[in-house]
Image: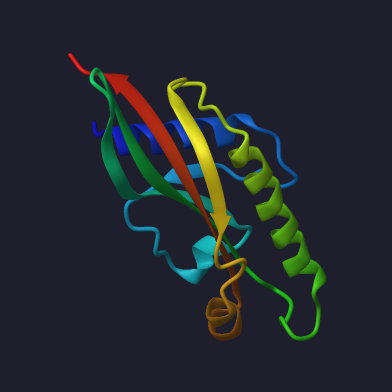
Length: 149
């Protein structure tokens, strides 16, 4: 398996070991699009995104920087313009995951270092307005170094 999918799997494993305010099971997918009925109750999807760069660090050490997307999605019951509590709950849940990820050292891959987490969009206005779906995207940037043989 490729390094980026190994990292994504390690992130999924650690997310699923953590206790959050909502008991969702994270999954790794290549195609995260699903029907609206599958978003009832929410879901967390991890998707390999980019191999940002591979570089030589020293004569014997290389490093790869990659990014992994972690999407939080949920079908919203309340009308977005009328009640904010449901959406606030999903925003809080996304913040919990972000706080966890920014400090993550994947247990299955101790050589992986999380170098940053970006939350953009905080929520997708388009999804909320047109589909009544909360969608927030966390992009986790990681670095992994290895010795050249």
